[in-house]
Length: 289
Image (cartoon, rainbow, N blue to C red):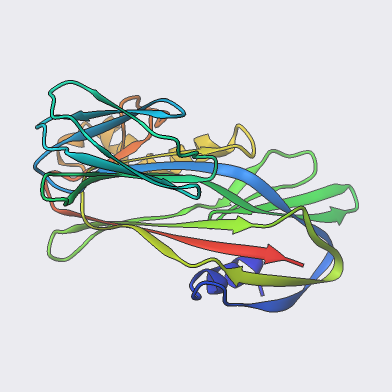
């Protein structure tokens, strides 16, 4: 009867459907943790060009199209959607827009045939904090984006479950990278006491990427505490670190750091030229009393 399971069931449900549950949890306060994790995910959707997007400021995006195939761009958020034409150039082209990205933003670049050739998704995720009183202090659990971090009295935060990022090599030598993001929207305190009644309502699942992708890059920053993001990085780069020590990176397939070895600039995939299929979905769940 874990809250995570309830969130997952609601997240898979059609928009505006859900259920009410009473959870038996001892002496607990449950409240929202707003904007706790920020993800930026990008990929080229064709091998014919390499697109680089740079956020110059809140309303300006720099677009660099290596083979000059980019012709138009859409910028979408909760505020709405704008479409702009991209001037053909071997230099960076600047696009202005008036779309706010406080919660999420999806940018798609198209070629002359209106086929999408690059996408970048930025999403700020919220979660839930569950606090249980123990004799010597409080035990805190934060559920955020399918991950789980815990802290016991007088101890540091520790990640006990990672975000759902899975990398597989299939039997036919295709690679598959799949991510499931979960955004739990709630306002303030959900409840306290031994029996907490909670309502879970889906805001509709979305598919952000699906199909073959190139130059995949993802970056995550967790704002709960300084120790969380490095624990993610160490987990994702564990195999890479072993292979680097062994001097076998020339045959390595898996997560690798983008630029700096710590993962501070994000992650890419060492694919050794095998085809990579990329699937990113997001579940959006509203939790209330």
